[in-house]
Structures are given as structure tokens and as C-alpha cells.
Picture 1: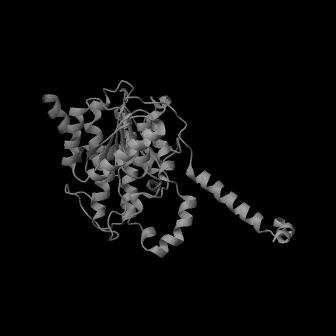
Picture 2: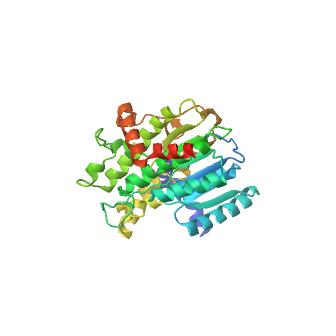
Picture 3: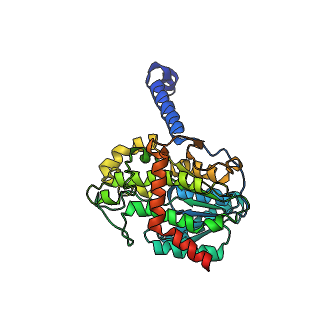
Length: 352
């Protein structure tokens, strides 16, 4: 055995070189695809942060990171049992990691119901008169095992449109008075996505209410909702000009390990999972990677006066051509507040 080992020459074959190059290239691609880490180390001590959908995926990672930076984090979830479990886990992890008593609490919120959104906002206003950061993170895609299933919410709107766009807009407007009281300047952060680039939107029907009934596809409705997020972000920033509140949006990129993939074709069978997993590992971000831009928008002091922008990998970037259409943004925003009856709610509050 000793003589065999002595005579062995690891450089007699090209395989070690091939394997080393393959591993090196793979790790380089993974690093590039993972995107930029949040460059800000700023603490946001005692700031009140609300994150919708904060018990899984990038929402969970943002909640954990902001709690570690001493924020008071509220995760708004539709499953309170899961929310309580995740909050307890986060607290234990941060206690072990940083020896800190993190504040992470779950609150019930179901974006599928406008009435529930209003009740959530009322509860928050009573308990937290000041809100510093609102992150509209929760969203759906492929929500049903039956593909391309057109389903309405209890309020009568297509489910992607309501959960990804309309309900977050309602929540944002209801909490604006709380955000305006923030001494550090209220921040609204909306999560969009690369899919917006494939979206279509008609200026005569920006909410696609007339289109959904005749031609419906999960991917199209998801893309449309993410384009709507960008347009509404830009127009709301214009409406809030002169106030202390900023509003921006970002794309987390292509992220694996989220509930979005639960009913995706990529998860349709064990064979498909087996074949696609290496490529997903190589080209898709982890939830930790995807959360970095959101953490940056919430913590970077230099963004205090930046509003109405679309970010990718912690940098301001251009949205699609439709995502930069000012007239389309205005029409969409006007239609949105009309549907949500936001003006009526504000008048009632003032009269009281």
C-alpha cells in the first residue's frame, strides 16, 4: 500500500484540473447571481417596522436582519400559528448569536380581504401611533394547484391583483398618518420583481379588470401586479413630495426556497425537482440574498431623501418602458384610489 501511494501521481490525469475549474466557475457564478450584500451597517434602534408576509422567504430574512439592528419588528401574517413559531425561533437565534432580546411580534393580516386590512390598520394605529418603516413584501404567484385558475377575492378582484397590489396600496394609505409621525422619516418599501418587464397594461384599463375574464394566465397576472407596484410607487412618491415620507420599490431577483415555488411547474414532480435543482442552486438567489436590497432600503441613512425609485442589488436601476410611463402611472393611481375609496376614508377621519 505504501509503495502504491508513493508511486501515485495526482497530476498524471486532467481530472483534478477539470474538477477544480468546474467548482471554481460554479462558485463564481453563484457569487455573482447572489447579488450585492447590504452595504449599510446602520442600526435602527426602537424604530417600528411592519413587514407583510414576514414568516417565510425574503420577508423572514428581512425581519431577522432588522430585528438584529434593534428595530421593533411586526410581521403581518395570515397564519398566526406559523407567525408565533417563527417569531420565537428568531428571538432564540438572535439571543444565541448576539445575546440580544429582539422584539419580533406577529399580527394577523389577510390581504385577500380589504375589511381585514382596515381592521389591521386600526389595530396598528391604536397600539403604534408612529410607524417608521412599512415593507409591503407579501405576495402570491401560482397560488393554486390548478394552473391558470381565475379566482376572485371576497372583494371581487382577481387574487394576484388584490394581494400583490390593491391590498398593499390600501394598507399604505391607511398607515400614512402613522408614517408621517416618524422622527427619522417614514419609509415605504414595496417589493416588485423582474417579471414586471413582461407585463402589459392598457391605459384605458390599467387594472386589467376587463382583460382577466377573457384571457387569464398566472404568470401574466403576476407580472401585471408587479408592474402596477412600480408605477404606483413612482406616482405616490410624487404625491408625497414635500413630506418626510419616502416610497421606493425593489426586485429581490429570482429567489428559491420561497412559497412562490410551492405550486410552480418546477415543483410538479420529484423528477422535475431533481433535474432543475442544480440549475436553481446555480442561478437563483437564496432568501437571504434576495432580502439584502430591502434591508438596504430600510437602513441606509443616505436614502432619507430618495423617493420614487426602483432598486436592484442595492442600486437604482431602470424599470421597463411601461414602468417609466408617467401618464400610465397617473391613470393607474387614480383608478386605484377610486376603487379603494381612499378619499372617502380620509374625509371621514378628518370630520371625526
